[in-house]
Image (cartoon, one colour):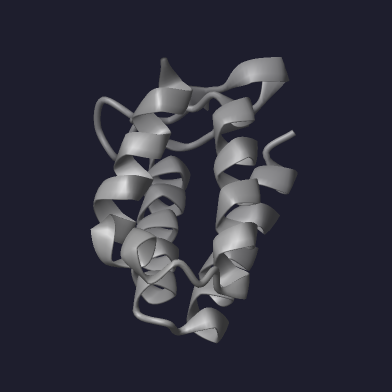
Length: 104
């Protein structure tokens, strides 16, 4: 169910123009991989940003503010990718990837 929610979120952010173009920018592949990694982490939206711990799958933990920050970075990456700014999108993707790796 989370996978579906994540894909719907990314589709809403990336939108139909990306699908209509047919060309797949480099950031799209990285964004798809990060989306799968995000789903595997299993974080749910914190009930409040100051929540001390948000539990994910496989023993992952992060603070509420970290999870909110990662969600924001995912949205910014999708927005930059949609706009054709691969470099901007990849920098946001790297931030989330680093934070997901440190949450183990």
